[in-house]
Every structure is written in structure tokens, then in C-alpha cells.
Image 1 (spheres, rainbow, N blue to C red):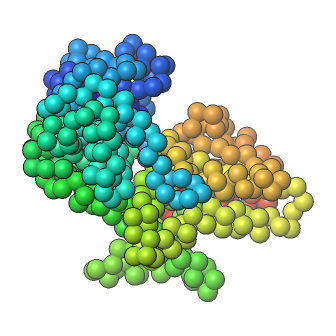
Image 2 (cartoon, rainbow, N blue to C red):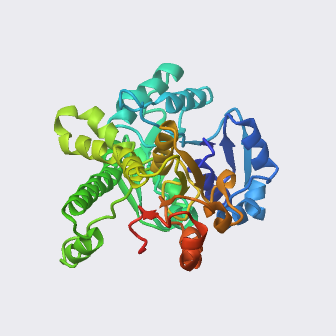
Image 3 (cartoon, one colour):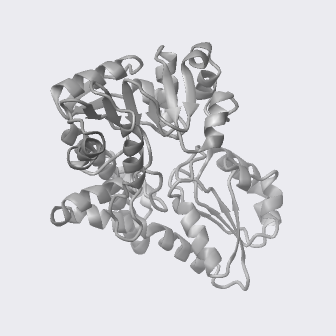
Length: 400
């Protein structure tokens, strides 16, 4: 039984159903439940869409709003960070665990795929199950943390072939969870404790956050001194033990801008570098908006076209998108901004040429392949299309 059939839960449910397990997806969204049962759910990734229509999946997968008795319960719900206090908001995971607790029986296994703060399985989830059921964890109910590892746009490859951490509260929990994932994961399964799995998952995204912050700070230094960021990073990366990540307009998605705060919450006095990296990356949308303001400061009522609204290139995921934050700030300041993205249904354009007509500035915030191709096609005629031919490219992967 998979509680939460979103970005993480649904692909996992599809894989277990394909592997021959009777699988039930639990979700509070009645429309989503109906779409899964009727096989009308629209999935943008071809492999996942094909799985939903697969005969084995059709036989093994159903969805409902309330849990029922089962053997394995996988919790895959969001764990956002409180925007003010910068601590983990475990409301959804507590509700999901409470929901599951109504049907838990001795011998059941609960797996937490949601990212959680360190010690959460031992000090929050296990006591919650015990208080609601009267059962002991892990003596009566097994508990393991098996954090997800997927990437929007390449979910099928990631969920099948990535290595996975299997962090049980005891050896029996680890062994039981390992057996569950062996049915479809082709990557290596690494047995460990729940605490190590929690910390390792958080470290994965914190590592990237800190290194992106370094890249962003270095990019600003290069800009202030008049050096080419691309050239400086290119030469630095020729060192055999250096691999600088790309700078950008900020960090988005549901992992990198969230997970480091969980470490800060657990160890506030031992996470100074982590906290500073978060602040550096969080201020990047504001810096992006400021650069755009300066670029049109000589114009009265400038018309700005912003391209790209997702948090990463070539995917439609808009969660925590720094591009959206930058545009929102410009709009709040009274600027006329036309925000476009060919991968986001409500922001798609029929003709980029028409959208750029009489524009004073084009800001390329996210360099989807389709955006880059359209701009390259229009490059020779931009002077005739736009008022000023001002193009600002914030995606470091694009040469303009």
C-alpha cells in the first residue's frame, strides 16, 4: 500500500504492480484516485504512461482514499519546510502515518520514503505508531526509512537503476524492506540504520546546495571584476580533482532548497556553512530581478519577456522555481512581464516571434532545449522583432 500517489508514490506503485504485487495507492485527492482507477491519468513521461496502461499493472494496481489492511505500507508524502521558521513541516507525514495506523496489524512493515529530519523515524514516527495502535515498534510493527532517489523528467530510469538505502530500525526491518525493493530495483540495495539513511539522504542534497552556492558566489566575483565566469569555471574544472557546479538564478525543486534546513534544525550550532549556503541560494531570485531592473533602467514602462518557469531545464516541474520567484518580484514592482514556458501548459506560446514583438528585453531564465532552438532560429531577426534587441541569458549552459 502506497500512501501518497504524487511525484514519488505513483511511480513506485506502478513498479510494484508491474513486479506482480497487489498494490493499492492511497490519496486524499478523489479526482486523482479516480484517474488512476480509470487509467485516464495524464503522465508526461512515456515509460510511466506505458506502465499505467500495462496489463499487469491494470490487474494489480487500484487506488482509494482510505487505507485497508495489508502487509507493507509505504509513506510517500511531501515534507516541506516551514517558510518562516525554516523547520520541517511534518503535518502530511504525521497524518499519513495516523491514517495507516488505523489498519496496522502485528507483523506489518511501514516504510518511510518521504525525506525526514534526522532521528524522525525513531523519535517521531515510531512513538506515533505506538501511541495510536498499542503495538511496539519495531518488535510488533517493522519500520524502515528508504529515501526516494528520482529526477523529474527521467523518473523511470532513476527509480529502477539507482542504488537505494534501506535503513531499518532493526535488522528485521532492514531485511523485510530489502525484500520489498528487490522486486524491481536493479541498483544495489545498501542496508543501514534508519538514522544513517536519514542523514545520507539529507547530505546528498546539502552537498549540491553548498556547491551551487559556491558557484553562485564565484560567478558574482567574476562579474564584479569583469572576468568571464564561463572561462574561469572552465579552466578551474580542468584540474583533475575539481568539478564546480553551474551557477544560476537559484535552487528549486522539493529537495535541494528544503533538505539542508532539516540538518540546520537538528544541529543549529554545527551547520553554519550549510545555513549560509541556503541564504546565498535563496537570495539569487532577488539578485536576478535586480539585474533585470538595471538592464531596463533607462526605459520608461519596459516590456519584458521572461523565458522558462520550471526549476530545472527540460522538465515541467515548477516546485520552488526560482524563475517564478524572480518574475513575481518584477511584477510586484510594477513591471510588465510576459512569462512563457513551452513545457508548462498555461505558459505555452504558439509563436515566440509574435511574443517577442515590441519587447524591450528577453530574459532567458531556464534554457529548455526548445527555448534555445527557438531563440537560435530567431537570432538573425531579433533586431527587427524587438524594440532594443536586449537579451539576458541567466542559464549558464547557453552560449549567447
